[in-house]
Amino acid sequence: MTAPALSRSFRPALAAAATLAAALAGCDLEWDKPDLSAPPPARFIEAKPHPQPPISGGRDFAVKFGSKELTGLVERALDDNLDLAAAIARITQADAQARISSAAQWPSVSMTNIARTTRTPGTTINVGSASGGFNPATTSSSSSTSTSSSGFRARNFGFFQLGLTASYEVDFWGKNEDASMAGRILANASRFDRDVVEISTVAAVLNAYFQVLTAQDRLRIARQNVTIAQQVMDAINARLEVGVATVLDTSQQLTILAQQQATIPPLEQTLRQTRNNLAVLLGQTPESMTISGGSLTRLSFPRIAPGLPSEVLLRRPDVAEAEARLASQEFSVLQARAAFFPSLTLTSLYGFQSALLSTLLLRPDAIAIQLAGTITQPVFDGWNLQGQYDLQKGRYSELAALYRKQILTALSETENALIAIRETDRQMKFLSVAVTAARRALEAAEMTLREGTIDIVTLAQTQTSYFQTQEQLAIARLSHFQAATSLYQALGGGWGPTTREIEIARSNAAYEADRGPWP
Image 1 (cartoon, rainbow, N blue to C red):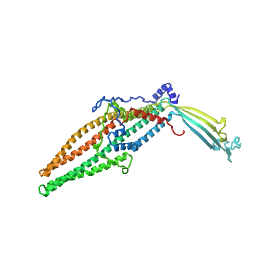
Image 2: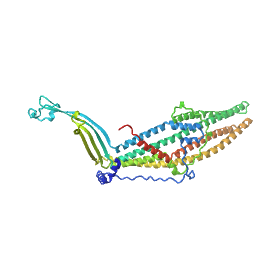
Image 3: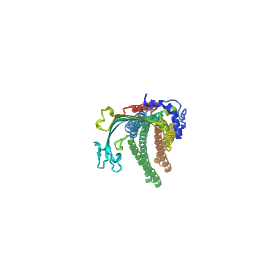
Image 4: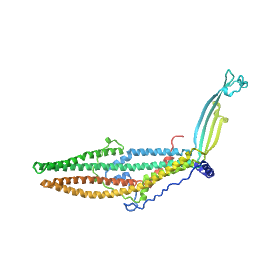
């Protein structure tokens, strides 16, 4: 029987004593756990209620957009992103902390070697006559003593020890086991956190690349608009030379031309800065990375079905992480509760002891053995234990609220992403019609201008309408693709119950793996 199992078997025998001890200490050990019931809805408002397989993971999801460059960027981010590297480092820390939290379940054994000599003054150990201070019975010579002229003898005492000491706290109430479980579950949560970071990283790379393509599209549109405005400006200047246009006409058109030219620098800034941000996501310097880009219109839009709300909750690593932290905290509450009860600590010593170094080893009469058991019961500690217990219960209530909030957030994010996909798609269709109509209107206005019968106000309005609708369509297309990214995140980014089991198995394997050099 293992030590934890052995300690568990003694719990019924000490239950009455523990209850009495708690009563004497005036402790409040009641705990009303918060209600965690939060059944998910039967279906999403914006989707048909049909079960669906999990969404593809980061690399496979990126492939659906039909861009080799985008797929390569996602793969590089998954390999080199520094947030992911930090999350992996936190896993190592959590695994180490799990072992630290579990250390009290095992005996502590250490080697205790002592070499000590003590000189005791003769004036403190000799008893002589009141007048002379000399004890005739202690006048014999000794190698470990010295006699002064007054007759007092100082003594040297030697002590040498070579042995092992062991200490073990019998875990009657499960305090040490609860601490171990709390640490091990937090190690699971750290792995779920890494998965959350991975999904967020993929989403950030996708959105940054979409922004690069959109900035390039908008730059092309802006330059085309500048060309159109310049052509109209040239036509008005030609009319001005023959006396059929006014200075007001040229000034209005010059304003439109300058406004279009002014849109280019901010777009150039956005393009370059977004490329730099993308380089950081890939763990590279901006100077070392080149992105070709292209056009957002050339990408394919993936079709994604969300499935059922209950499926989504099982596929969200952030929900699993919140659940794991809550489960860990429950063991922390139990650990704080067990601290009220008596603690039995066993100590032992086995080794060799001698007053002389020459007789320390290889002598049966130098063997020293010591066994001791200590029972400690808190009686009054200024309500420290009660405060610790209340603190852990409060932390549990906090994590319970955050867990429920995470569930609501997951459902809300999915609904919002579905709404965004649907509404941005409708917006794009309307704006496409508007761009086509505005283009025809501008062509008609330019033809009328060449014929010499155009009203300059109508021409200005036609140009502005065409320029604005093109810009709005490009922005709507970006929002449409970003909605796909949001839905990818909301559905868990390819995570699922199988991934959860794999991560927990990895955590258990790390806990049971080689614990390093002895001891």
